[in-house]
Each structure stands twice: as C-alpha cells, then as structure tokens.
Image (cartoon, rainbow, N blue to C red; front, side, top):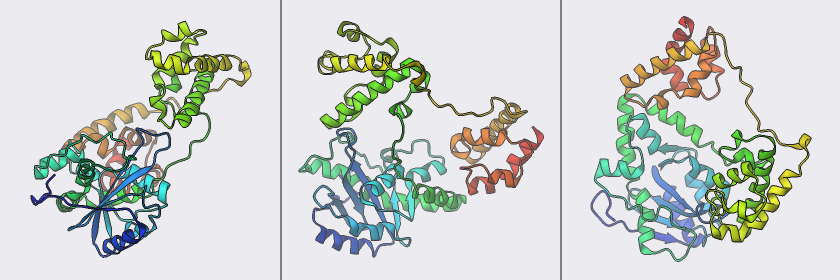
Length: 382
C-alpha cells in the first residue's frame, strides 16, 4: 500500500492505555486529524467498534479497543473544537464512538458530504482516492470480522488506507468548497452529523423490519413472534439476525402461516439447515401468533398526513421543476440540493413566508439563504 507521496504507509498498533495517552498528546497538538472505524456488525449479534484508525500529517496509528479498554485519552483531541476531525461518511462512526466509548466529535469535516456538495457523482472513498491521487484501495477486507486477533499485516494495511490519504483529500475539497462558496454548507451539515446518536429500539420489532408495513392484523402478529424468535436465536448464537433467517423469509412465513415442516420447507429462502435448526421453533412461533385474540392484534402505525392540501400537488410539481433547473445550474444532484421531503413540506404551505420556512424541521440555513426567497415565490404563484 502506498501513500500519496509514494512512500509505504507505516503504522503503530496501540494496545495499552499508557501508549494511547502519549498518542493522544501528539494528536492534541495537531490542527487536523483523520479518523475511521472498523466494526463487526456482519459477524456478531451486538455490534462493537473493533479498530480505530487515526492519521496525522506525518504519522498513522491503529488503536485496538479490544486490547486497550480505556479510550478516554481520545476524548480530548476528538472533542477539541480547535482540532478538525476529518472522516468519510462519518454519521454511523460518530454514533458508534458515542455509543461504545462516550466520545464526541465537535469539529468535523466529512469528505463524503464535501464530494456531494462539489457535485462529484462517485463519492465513495475508493473512487475519490483513485480519481484524485491514482491510489487503488483494495476492498478485500471490507466485510472481514474485525474482532478477530491477531490482525494480519494485510488487514492492518487495509484499515490504515482509509485514513492515510484523507488529509490531502480534505486539503483539496476544502479549497474547492471555499472557491464555490459552499464551505459554510458543509460546516452546517457536519455540525448536525456531530449530534447523531444511536437510538434505543422501543416497541415491537416489526417497527424496525423493512417491508413490515404491508402486513396487517394476524400476519403482523405472526411476524412479530418470528422476529422475537430470531432475535433470541441471534443473541444465543452471537450472530447477526440476518444470518439466522432473512426478513423476506420471515415475512413469507407470516403471510402463508405453515402448520407443518413440509409446508415450511416450501417457503422461499428456507434452507435444509435452517429447517433442521429452527423448524419446530418457527412453527411454534406461528402457532403462538395465531392464538392472539382479535382485539389484541397489532396495527402498523401510519402517519396521519392529510391526503391532499389544497393546491399542494401543483405547487410540488412546480417545485420539482425548479429543483431540476437549479440543481443543473449548480452541478448538484437534485436530492442534495433539495430532497423530496423538503419540497413536499414547502408545497403544503399556502402563502409561505420566511417565518413559515423556519418552521420546517430539517430545512438547513444554507438552503434558506441560497434559495429561500425562490421557494416563497414559487409557492405564492402556485
């Protein structure tokens, strides 16, 4: 693996808190640092951070939280508002740092958001490093189990590549955003990303199951029993739920409601191994769902948005036409400039004003400053 300057990337693996404290002191003296995380969500029931990659302008470190349990020294430099933390696609990493270690980032530059604000269509890190520096990232270990130890030399090199050239990328993007007058956009978006937190799941599991909204009554009750069974098995075996049984398989079981192993075997996606391991338990879950009294059957919650607001359909059509033209002028994806939910919220307002725009949750200040008056004009004419 080569760095931007053609030199081999070397890194130090940190496994004890004494050395981590020394590294944290070095980081505290930097103007900007690059950070990335590796997790094990594809391999275990309870996801955790397994590796933290950090680069300065001159040095690279792999911090092993499985060996070094106390990561509190990192809270200082990561949370220092005078130190810029450069990350790529930071949202979930920010959530995970806070969830696992209580560490916050307060001054963020997200190179993925930057790429989108520059109108770059391929904004994955590998594509960006190849386009900007001719660097080829080997994605061989993208789905590896990062909880396994010891880390191989190849895995260490793979992990380090995600931050070793991130600061030069930041240098280019920050300059280009400043030239285009879009650096303030990124700063606002990054402040919001820094506030992201992992939300605790509440209520039935079907609320977090993609496609569950199409099921009703009895089928939804059976699906919940199946999801609860899968969750218990997943926890017991320490495997991700999707590796136990797929959502699609569970939904088909909930709709067909088989009563025998023979019927269960005909379900799409059901393997012989799954049938042997979970068949009887699945049938018991179906039977339990069938026994729930009618008056206690679950109902999938629906948003109670008004079907039609007077004139909203025509206003939305005009807003989308405006967005297509505006995004083409600025060289941005339409969804980056103004996502559909935002246009729908504006279209629902008859006689919009600056004050009513301020009431739309999620509408950014940079959007209001850039085209707020245009939105008000379009809604007034619609």
